[in-house]
Length: 312
Ligand SMILES: Nc1nc2c(c(=O)[nH]1)N[C@H]1C(S)=C(S)[C@@H](COP(=O)(O)O)O[C@H]1N2
Ligand SMILES: [Mo]
Image 1 (cartoon, rainbow, N blue to C red):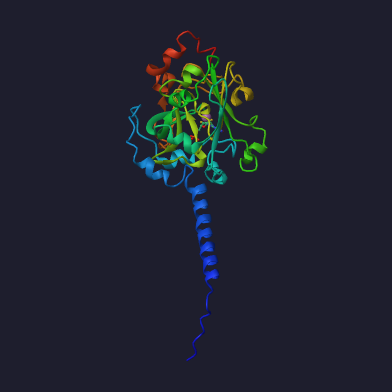
Image 2: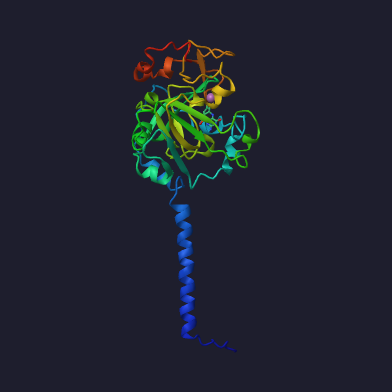
């Protein structure tokens, strides 16, 4: 039998070896901290699943996750309602940062990770209705927009708040087309933004938002048509003048600034009196659309002196 001779190791080599090992450890840690610390990561599911179930704000059955996540409107990827499910997988949602600017004291760019640490996460079960006349009921997870806004101290000139979606045509391939004037912009009047119903979602159904539903950060305004609920937000700007929004720019007659759900005001090409319940069988009758999507008690007061046929 032959034994291989174990080479003698000089102490200097041992030291170098351990430094090398240590450095490898450090590199590993650094990698964990860039990937692992930022949100939303799979570990967010653990945090989200511990959030107590939200109060049902509507007396309707929650829509199945598979329907909500496979029938989406996300023009940055496609105008087709099925394909964003796979196309949006290419969007890298961490790290993610949000720039706050305009009529506000505390301007700056903030990591979503830090935003999440400073805002209490909760679940809200809201009905959501698209202008194209389908509706769904979704358990969203996120935080109050009003509480979030207060942290930045808007000035007395802040009358509106404008939101902008990421612009990255290499990933968001729909941005290579001219269906909308990119980036997608939406806005709210300050009192609408400060209403307790208005919500910033980072998750749904006890998990992080799927990319196609607007990860890592989207707006939810349950009394307005779906297009106000902008996805993949990278910028929030406070303004004195009413911002020009993407859909308003594209077709003024069809998509107004307010976009309140209103069965009495038809879209120029179809009625808004009824809605198809997402996921329901074709035999299920359509649902009668409610004024302000059923949230009138909480929001009608915001529009008491306005003619909603003019300000649609
Ligand atoms: N950035 C961005 N946000 C968007 C859209 C979009 O195309 N791009 N579509 C809007 C429309 S028309 C609707 S109905 C809702 C759909 O939300 P969902 O896909 O999560 O159901 O997102 C809104 N937010
Ligand atoms: Mo929509």
